[in-house]
Image (tube, rainbow, N blue to C red; front, side, top):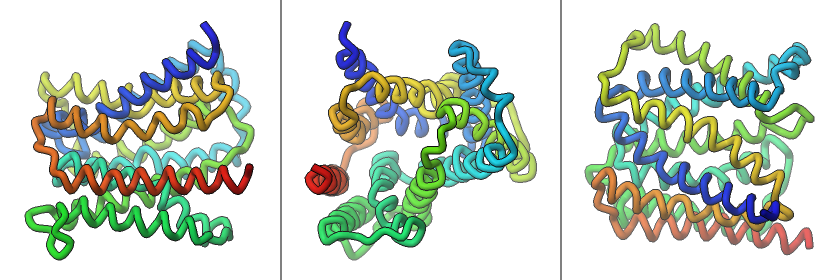
Length: 296
């Protein structure tokens, strides 16, 4: 099998797993609190990442970690999984899955905005246009197309979902290329994240054993939202001859996620959600096309 074909297959697996994440969150949150979901999913993902390191014979790389890389891992672990998922799971607990998922998907545009103060970059007219279109899409989703009122949609939930994009974008700006193995860096970050999560949950509400039916979604989130899927995505990027070829497939994810939310969770998908999501994804694709056009 050709490398590019393998890359496509892995990318389709990634799209499928990430598309199920919103439904898995909502199902898990029927039986556990956001903090319980945070603790157990982080624990399972950390164990899974350790197993991946063992299978790839990369445990020896952990001994090469110096103080600076550990300090960076401590910061990354605070941003993700701890802070990002604390906020994201709370947003999913008080919002319809379609709204939380769609708003969270605007993080690439937030990354563009953060690159101005953090990296000193300047926004082009096309980037400003993309951000504006994405913002309109977010407003349509949050207000269900009414623009003037949130209706029965939680304002706090909308604020949390929007805040999660800020944290995720910051995570990727801090997680710049530094020559470290990505899986090793992810594992060390999750070890610190597990420490923060454990301490937080102990003080917030204590750590409890979930009911039996909650274990499957908890394990699923830990494996297929946080760990295994990331490893599959890294492998696909290594196999592909062009990141753009497989990158565009990822934008199918939120629309696939809406379908799964409807079929599995039973959410009625609002037309405004679909329209707003089209604007957000379209603005991201437009920005990527403009960047490739300039570089080409």
